[in-house]
Image 1 (cartoon, rainbow, N blue to C red):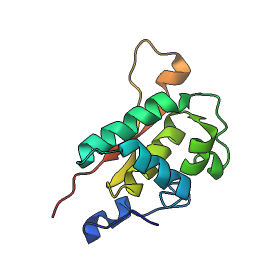
Image 2: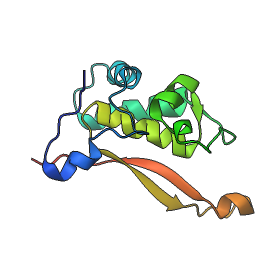
Image 3: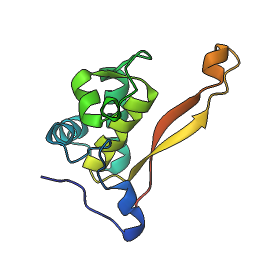
Length: 133
């Protein structure tokens, strides 16, 4: 069963599963549906997904990252740990599984209290796109 329902041609890219953002994976879909529960609107669903990934997936900066499968949403969900990149891939897949247009984002870290290595790194996140009809 695939919960992805394209809203328009413009948003298809943000709803389509990929090798890494495997939103059609049964475990991803089941987790997304269970986490969203009785939430009715996409914003509430996205907030529930975010909280579940933030609190239920352990942040581990030492998570392996040299293989594509290390980022694959279904593997992150099974492993129950990851860092910003892998957790963002999971969130993106969870959103897409519920038909919420989602994408990855990239940002420079600007934190003067961070270590030199951290301050010079890139942070990954996911964003939810509004549906237009």
